Length: 261
Length: 218
Image (cartoon, rainbow over all chains, first blue to last red; front, side, top):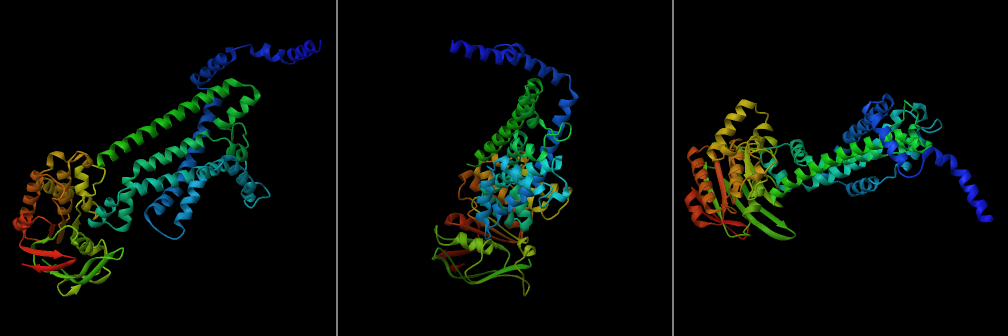
C-alpha cells in the first residue's frame, strides 16, 4: 500500500513532463530538427548571439595577443631577474578557473569596487576584459616555449649576418611562428568555450551580453532545448574548425622541424 | 682593402678550462688565411671571438680602419661575417635565406634580386632558389651559407670548418667557391680546417694553432 502511494505520487509529479516530452529519443531528435531549422533559416536571434560571441572572443584574443606575445618573446629571448617567477606565474594562470576570474573582475567592476566608476559591469567590455585575462597567459606561455625551442644557430646566423638586436628578435619570432599561432588558436578555443567568467561579469542580458555558451546554459535550464542545441552544434563546429587549424599548423611545424634533424 | 684585425694576447676559458692562451695575430693583408690545428685546439673559439659573437676573458680584439680603432657596434659587425660549421637556416626559401643580410640592411628589391641571383649562381643553387631551404642536403646548406654571407660583401669573412660535415663532391665544390672568391681579391678570407691537404690547396698564408695559441704562420 505504501509502495502504491509512492508510485502514484511519482507518476503524478512527472506526468506533465512525460506528456510534454514523451519517452526515449523523440525530444532529442525533435530538438535537433528544430535546431537545424534555426541554423538554416538564419534565425536573427541565433545570428546576433553568434556574432556577439565572435566579437567578444575575437577582441579578447587580439588584446591577449598584443599583451601576451611581447611577454612571451621577452621571457623566451632574454635572461633577467624575476624571469623564472614570470614563467611560473604564466604557467599557473594558464589553468585559471574562469569563475574565479569572473568573481575577481566582478568585485573590481561592481559599483562599490575600485573600478566601479567605469560602469563596465554587465557590458560586453567586461566580458572582453574577462576573456582577455583568460587568454593572455595561454598566448604568453605558449609563445615563450615556442620561441625558446628555436635553435641558437638561428640567433647566431642573424647576428653574423649583421642583424641588430631588434632584427634578431623579429627573426626568431618569425621562425617560431607555427608555435606562436598554435598558442593563439589554443587561447581562442579556451575563450570561445568559456562560460563561468562571462556569465558573472556579463550578466547574460538578452540581445546585449548573451553569447553562445551563456545562452546554452540558460536555455537548457529553461528546458528550451532547440536554441541550446542549435548553438551547441555551431559551437562544436567552430571548435572543430579551430582544432583543425591547430592540427594543420602543428603538423606543418612538425614536418618542417623534422627536416632539421 | 681598408679593414684589418689585430688580436693581442687573448685568453678564453669555459668552465675554468682554458681554451685560448695568450693568442695573438694580425690579419692585415687581403687574401686567404687558413688556420689549421687538431680538433679541440681552440680554432672555433678563436673564430667566435674574431666574429664578435663572444668576448675574450683577457686581451684585445681590435678592428682597424687605417690607424683608427673601430667601435664594436652594428656598423663594424656589418663589415665582417662568420660562417659557423653548422649553418643556421631560416625556415623559408633558398632565395629569401640568401637575401636576409641585404633585407636587414634595407636594400631595395631589384638590387637584392641581382645580388642574390649572382651569389646563388656562384654556389650552384640557382635551380633550387624557390625551394624551402630546410630541404637542402648538408652540402647544399653549407653552400647556401656561403652565398648568404657573400651577398653582403664582407671585408673579412671567417669560415669555420666549411667542409667538415659534407661529402667529397660538396667539399670540392666548396673549395672551388673559395678559390673563386680568392680570385676576386677584395677581402680577407679566414678558413679553419683540420685537413692539411685542403689547407695547402686554399691558403695564401697558413697559421698553425695548437693548445689555444697560434704557434706559427708561413
